[in-house]
Image 1 (cartoon, rainbow, N blue to C red):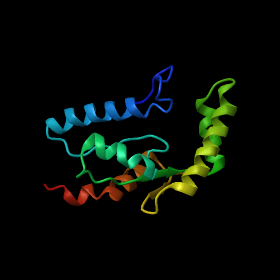
Image 2: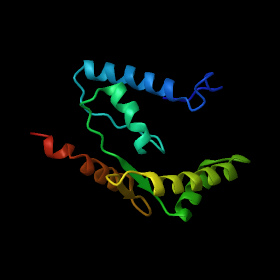
Image 3: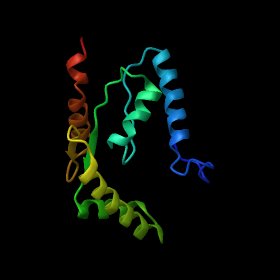
Length: 139
């Protein structure tokens, strides 16, 4: 939602466009009766981003932070399979840097879900369980 190149003048982190896009998207879904959203972005769980969600979605939003984790070996394997050519080293360095930031700065209420050696379905079940959504489903 914030991918724009080059970065807009005065917004090098693209936070303004991300927030505006999130607000527009949420307005459209909420207007049709939807009440749940899964937002994915590597560092979106950081507390510094909470204000963006509250401004874009309203003060009554309930945020459940879920951080998918992987060992360094698993991250390397996944990135090696995804990245081509000269981008791999840059992605590996970025992944390690972000992992350190997330380890140090993710709020204590962040649910960490290990992904090593697990199926997508298994991981998804744990993520949905962390939200408490299934307890609210009837029928």
